[in-house]
Length: 466
Image (tube, rainbow, N blue to C red; front, side, top):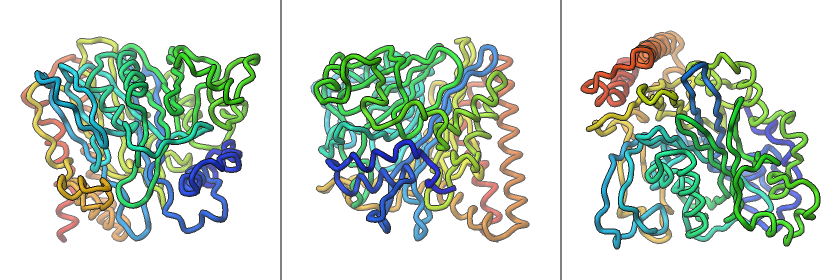
């Protein structure tokens, strides 16, 4: 599925973005499928994302995330996604600053345990969860407000900071907007020599509520999700239902001439070039995702959500030059006696990956098979992250080798896919039992995700070596 069909409603963006650098306009065009002729041969967008949230029947509520990034024809994948765990911590010396991807910020006295799916080169994360059942994911968005290339907090840093510092979804929103006001957002969101920067949108959820937070520079609007289904993609999507906002958001828009101060304020229409009247009928991933969610509304399970993330005709599961690099599905039961369960792939293409469960318990084993090697000395040289070392973790390496088998050896491919499906179904059955019985074997759960990863690697090894 190519990006040519995606977001035709953003076409005016290219014509009105003269103030931006040509490289970012080209990347935006590649993302929206409206690339002008001058962009031919460019390296393309670094990251394209789609996130969705939908209610499960009765006490279960899922928070679902998926991430896309480009796959170049001469590389196995442009960016490695790792799944990593960080325990809760107490920070006694608050004079010591916290180093994020580019800048240092003030530390807080206490941080919560978190599990992240993140590009292996940076400090933050694309998506993740914490021990209190808060889940956050972010994506790239553009609009009328100039994108800042100066180093500040990345949107992905804000994802991790929100998870580390908040025990509810709304508190996480507060953390993000406060840090946005204090430190700003900006910096290259790509490792290597390609320059790519953007504003950010966030989907934030916990056991009881969910929020969509969308930004344009330091200005922002937030919408509380109170019913139905909700998804976000690479566009501003908050229109007139604004539950919280930056205090100067409207006056700034009026000052810039984007809003006359009379008609009803529409955030997406004001801060971008969207025709929001066409937003729900456009043949792009935002609309396609909403259609798929609506189709299953009232009868959604976590398996349904994984099927949606694996859907290629809709463009949600990207293939070709752009490839899904990692996916996440979280179940957030409203009953606090039932554990939250977070499924991660940690590998590209969810259709040919295994969703593996993670549950927060004390003394979690480190996730060694999905943790990438570190290159502290080389990446800290100025300019930072200007080189791209081999960051493939053990699972990623075996999965990439397995994909070659799936593409070229039909009989082996069928056996391997059958075994992957069998493993996944066994895991689903085990997780359903936990949800129904509200009982955890903590000694087993400590090693749950690492053991699942080893079981997946075990499926790949015989086919790779033979």
